[in-house]
Picture 1 (cartoon, helix red, strand yellow):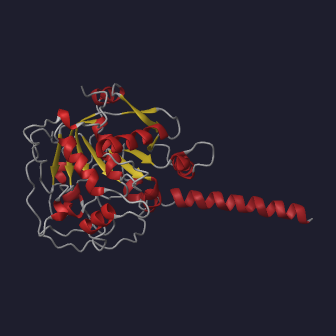
Picture 2 (tube, rainbow, N blue to C red):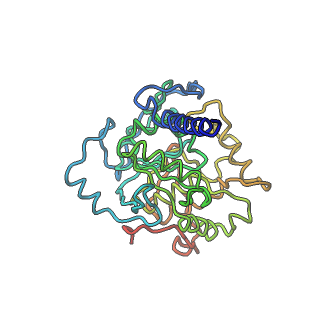
Picture 3 (cartoon, rainbow, N blue to C red):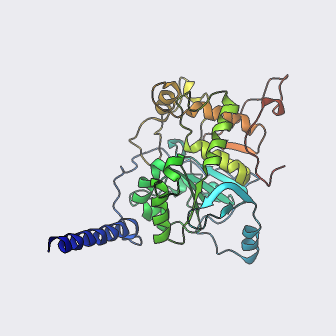
Length: 353
């Protein structure tokens, strides 16, 4: 009798596990979830909304209108972006945007009042679990409300799931691209992140979830090495989500307007403004303190935030990239050097020539 009883207990445990997973991922998706983040107590004075750049086509800041047949056809004819595959059907990503707002997670965004300007782009790109609003705080005046693409690190998956009410259930027609080490993304049943994303897509089949292939991950490493002369592994560096997002945006967008990214030498200025690393964590670490500690780190793996920003400034001399909140432009090259001679190795999307 013991053996049947053990089998019965095992079956019961499996059923309870499946039910728990379903509740974790899907339970109360349409309701309000508790948040464990600190409320935003920033008291910076509100700034006037600066007119959008001329090349940004303004669109309504409310929920986007349903796609017209022309927009649907444009999406169908969008070029294929190699290296990004659907988590369920493994189909490649098809996407192209004339103008993009790339929204960082920086505290510099708070008080800028550029939400309408951000939403005026054809596509709005965000990173990790950066929200437009939470139960406690509405950030839309400063960061906008639309999301067309969200680039997410493997290490941020749990935070995204905890904030699923703001990031998943409330986001319509957005594309989610997850990146991570190949060991986490393998499809043989041993890839932890891949398995979780498969489950998430099965529970929410309307989500557009893509992962970065290991070949594409290698390409990102190669670009970093060509641009900086540093091998990522030898230098104990982890590429940041900002690196992946900017590189993807270069393939996706004709014009990129970046919001909240400081110039490479900003933190060296003696009177630089102190802001939180994440605008939605006002009591979190200081942004420049984070940048400097990672840049100087030699033991363990670190992001090279400042090094990456030097590369972005270099790309801005060749590609249509602009920086706002704070507003800055890369300094001109010396008279004996041109942008073409600077060895820009950024990926060129199929729509660029």
